[in-house]
Length: 284
Image (tube, rainbow, N blue to C red; front, side, top):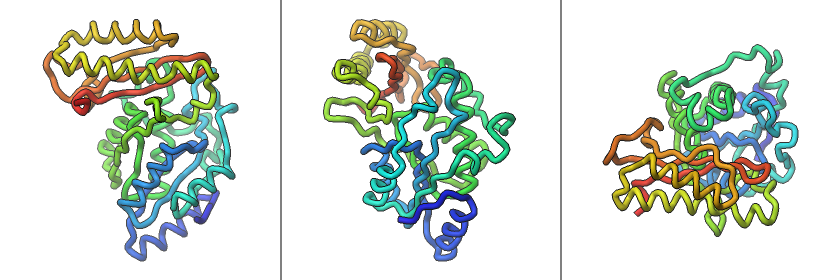
């Protein structure tokens, strides 16, 4: 696996792949890689000739009070994992490389319909930071396909909408959430959980699954389902932010009897903010 830090070097390599007629996939990450990230690479290898994995802890998607400086970083271990997984190229730029004029005053991207709801309501500016860095990576790599995990469901929809609205020539490929043996969605921040918090954490998915069962079994009062989810999270020891039943295609409020639903939740456990979701129509 090759590794580069500069945009020009990456473009030189990718241009040679293009000349050879090869299909290029991009897997964007912030590092601290786990099995979920490596599954994205595995899926990329199955649908493209060449795979670029990026590692960049993006400062402009962290809001005030969040853990940018403390975010877990393991560059040497991450590089080894990507090489073992079969990635062709690691792009690991510095902040100065991607934001040479500094982050202040940086041009930002925004998807208004998805920017201020759910996680966006609690993390103002976060999704503008995500949309901006993903746009930069798409412009730099110019991939044919880019892969994103379904755990960050709102992020996935936002990137799909952005690519469609801006006529970006890239296919956005969703990849199912990879979970621990007890159902906890894999996340780099799971390492922050204490032993007791780690024992409680799988309850988030269990509570989502219970709500999906109720809706599947004809529970049509979504507001009641949401209230029960918030109560169950609090009873389990979480500090819930939201528990919402939404239309899967755009996160809008569903009508009674509508199909194609997703339930999304965000909750704090100690100092760790966990998110997860479940698609009702797939829970059979």
